[in-house]
Length: 455
Ligand code: ADQ
Picture 1 (cartoon, rainbow, N blue to C red):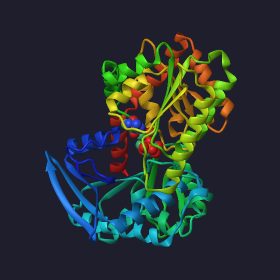
Picture 2 (cartoon, rainbow, N blue to C red; picture 1 turned 30 degrees about the vertical axis):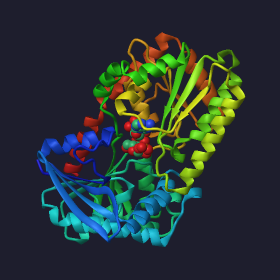
Picture 3 (cartoon, rainbow, N blue to C red; picture 1 turned 45 degrees about the vertical axis):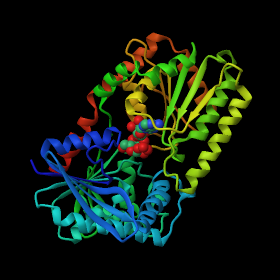
Picture 4 (cartoon, protein in one colour; picture 1 turned 135 degrees about the vertical axis):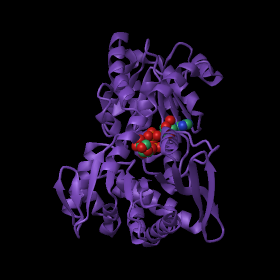
């Protein structure tokens, strides 16, 4: 088996808790075959940046670089988060395009390639993650690297007409042609990319998921829906109900049901729409009044980007408005908390909730939806209300699927979930859980790597 090299914007260094299934899955893959994990170490420095640090643990080498303040601003806060993130989430209205940040993005990718190329061996398998690093393979190829390089896009791939609206789109997206395998979360993402290549990207689709770049280089695409460590989360959740934080939450509910939402504070997650959907539920279902409390956990992310600050203010306003209009002296309908929690505690929260609210406007996959399902008590499972616009909706067909823009629909789904009889809840949950047991995070990385290695 060849050595695995993982490249991602952030690296989970030994001892650092980068909670989340992805870090765990990649670590397991690296441990299995021995390998290297390369990326940014999260530090920004006054000088020029690009200083390499290396450390070994077992058969894994961690090689990380720091970034200058200016590069971090241009590459990460700028082009990645203010240009690509909104574009890839279908939000042309929020795209902030600037040639200076575009060049900063290329500069950092080129610096990554400069540092990484000398560490690579001919028979390595390189796996690059996400939209921060689109040009990396092409830049490595320019530096003489011939080994297998794959890419996985964690976020959606939007329609061809949106991609082509970005200035200089061909220069950026044709960088993807230097990979051997492009992995997407859903069939729709895969197909939208192929139509971009055909319509505006100058390439051709020459077979099923086989593409050809101008000049003749061939590469593959494929669908690899990311998942979670299902068995681990299920046992974590069962144990977590005894944690003080989880008990405290349960006690505080008195005998009310709980609806829970857990999202990074991001405009793609549809939080204002969800709050309004909940308000609509309170208005349309007065018979359920006072019987359900909605807890929204939304840790602040990308706090340096203006849109995120505005979103935060907006949500505080809506939450205040809803509680002002509907609260009782002994009941607050909406609890809104901007904090991170240990992952194990989260699973206990999920398990305590009769309703899981996952209603993004666009999401590559949405792991919270899967975590919510995996955390349920088999004897008394809750109901997932899931946006049709999340990648997870392609797999979790037994959720109550909603369009997040349809507030009445969201409101009615909350009411149905709250009132659903046990037998129907169990039926729906079993079907989804069976799927998640089979298609867990380990299956995901094995499928991807075997496709890359046979590409
Ligand atoms: P994200 O946009 O970050 O990921 P998601 O898939 O939901 O979205 O993953 C979020 C993770 O953060 C989950 O594991 C969740 O438990 C954790 N989390 C959220 N709020 C938390 C809190 N308050 N405290 C602690 N942990 C919290 C991107 C894409 C997704 C895609 C993933 C993986 O946007 O569409 O599913 O990558 O590919």
